[in-house]
Image (cartoon, rainbow, N blue to C red; front, side, top):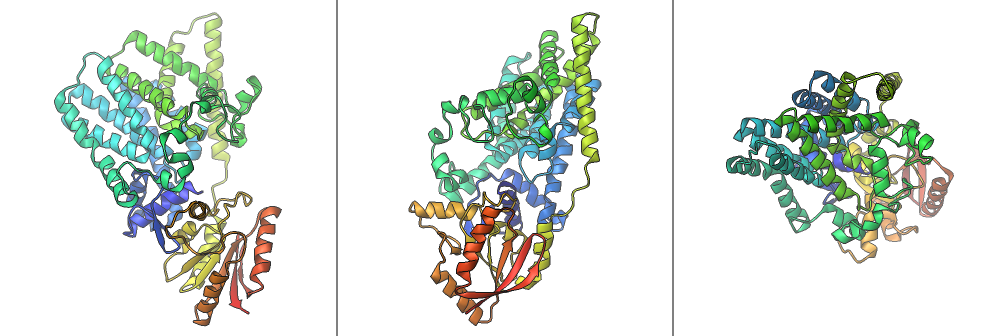
Length: 528
C-alpha cells in the first residue's frame, strides 16, 4: 500500500470499462503507474472470478515464467547444469520470492525482460523478422511495465554491435521498431488523454514536488547521501553492497553496517559467493568466446544492468527492487561461473576457496528453501473478510471511513454506496497496510492552488467540516443510512487521533455499533 492497491485499481477499472484510471469518491484521476502491468492484471481478472485479493496470483505466475525463462536462457547460452543452478538461485532469492507475492511490477518486469532477451537471441541467430518484431513487442511491454526498462535497448544495441557476426540488418531493425511501437504508443495516448501530453507522467500529477522535472527527481548528491530513512548510505554504496551480496547478515558481520531492516536479516538478492561466481562466469564466457549467442546474452545483460544503474544511482528514491529486471544476467552468469570453477577445481588455496564458496551457496539455497517451505500457508486477510462481510449492509449508504477510499472501491464499491473520507491524514502512525494516501496528496495539491475535484472529507484539516456534516445529516433524513467504517487502531498515537475526531463527531451525531470485527468496526451515525 499504496502501490499494490493502485495497480489493482487500474486493472479493475479497465475491466469495468472506466479506463486505466483511479476512481474513488465519485471522481476519476490519472494513476502514477504506466499501463503495462495493469493490462496483464486486467486480462487475468475475469479468470480470477473478479476477486481483487486474487490478483497477486498473476504476479506468482509471472515468477514461474521468470524461473522457467531463465532456465531456458541459461541452457541456451551455457549448459544444463548452469541452467539448473541459475533457476535455483533465482527461485531462492529473498527479494524475488517476496516480490512474487505482491501486486507489484518488479517480477513481471523481470519475466518479460527474460522473454525479450530470448526473442532477441533467436532473432539475431536466425535473422528472423518475426522474432525481431516479437522482441520489439516484448521490449515495448517491458517499457510500459516500468519506463526505466527502456535501458534494455542499450543492452540490445551493445549486443548487436559488439558481437561478430554483426547482424544489424535494416529489415530486422524495422521489424523490431514496428513491434516496439504498440505498447509505448498506447501509453503515449493514455498520457495525452488523461494528463494532456504524451510525455507527461502520473507521478508529476501526484508528486509534483519531486517529479515536475528531471532535475528534481535526479541529483548527483544521492550517489553519496542517503535518499531516505531506510538506508544509511547513498545509492552508490547501497547498490554496490547489495549487488556484491554483502547486505543483510553479511553486511552486519563484515561491514558493521545494516542497509535496511530486511525480514529475517536476509540478503536482498543473493549471498556474496553468487556475486563471485557471476564475475567468474562473465570472465570465462568472454575469455572462451563460447558462441555468438553467449556473447550477445552477456553483452545485453551487462549493458542493460549498467544503463539501469546509471538511471537509478542519482534517483531520489532508493529501492533495491528497481534493478531486479536486469539481474537475470547475474543469476545466469553465476550458474556458469559455479560450474566452470568446479570443472577447473585443483588442489591448493584456489580450490579450497571454491569449495568454501560452494558450501555457502548450497547452504543458502537449502536454508531459503526449507525456511519458505516451513512457513504456514497464508490466510485470507482478516480486513478483506471483515469488509466483505459488512458489504451487504452498505447498499445505498454513505460510508465515512479512515480506510483508503480507493481500497474500499475495490472491495465494497458499487451498489450506490458513497464513500466519504474521515480525514486526509497519511496514516504513518497507523503502521498498517490500508492507509489513506491519495486523499492526503490531493489535499496537498489543493493547498498549493490546485482546483480539481476532491472527494469529500469529514475532517479535512483536523477540524470537523460543518458543511459536510450537514450533508450527512440531510442524507440520513432522506432515509439513506450513514455509517462510520473505522479500522481498529494499532498504536496509541492513532488511537488518540480517532478519539479526538470521535469526540467532535459526537457533538452532531450519535453512533450505534452495528458490527464489531477484528480489523474494523461499523457504526450507524444519526444526527442529534
